Image (tube, one colour):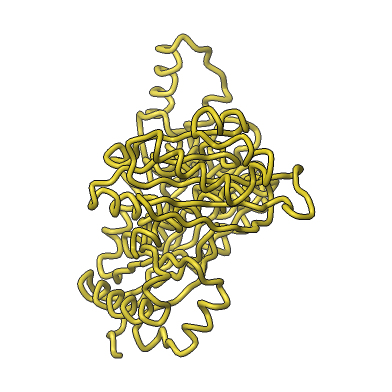
Length: 420
């Protein structure tokens, strides 16, 4: 299909910080910036993480400005000894440092108003490479702009909320003004359940992304797999048409029974819509998940329309007291068994005002397993009025991963039963 010709406006992102390279923190700034840029029709061609070293920062700045339409930098703009971004900029671009006297006065006034003590170290915040302009003059946020050989460079603080503020208020509007003819980039996520990544790839072996004008990607998640579609077009309606045509074909190839939602449509939000449409209430009975299932469900705004209550019955006594599970079942075949899961689901219905109930009981580990019931053995049940289905699963990984898989499969079971 002929989609016309478009050319991405691609920039580079340089994130600075030993904490990222040492694994102390996640690079959430890169995630946020990449998504915000894509939403405005821009792309990142490269993301680089570098240590808090002036020489290393300067080297990357020289490289990135030579190959990018724009450059965004985060981190290293504070008053401490490991904040070396400004000196690295001066070094890379052969610029002297200069003090912004107006900004210096603002800083001194703020410190005095708060009863603090002024120091030369704080005065460093008013120093910038010559020719740079502060993004938020008079506001307590570091960040400046500098154009180098026609390439706009935006230097943002590493503090996430400050970075996000300046990105939205300064950087994105300036990029939009500078590159008015950029194409529209739109992404769609198809959330797939019940198919392994290899099975998805096999089902899509005859699909030609280029024919539909998209880029196709695969992104495994806990309990589901995402198929991503990226469309680039001259305008919003064209991008939407491209995505719609490709999505319809992909859903047909994958099977509608495996597509649980798209984009932000999580399992918990999708089953919530289905329950609300029926006017039904839901109750949950949890053992090994310890309340995670109820937390996932109630994280959705408006869950009070359909979520009635949750029972966290971790001990055998709680299963008896709150759900009416017979003591003899807890002795044999035991708390982690099909009969106990059935009794938990029925008990959740009986002791609530719900029309549907989910029950989870299992061995999350790392200890407590046996040859007959190894760690990761989980029984999941769903009761809809008189209908009851219980499934046995064997999950692998850490305790937290077993719990997350259990929650995901419980929601998936409810979704399948509501669809049937």
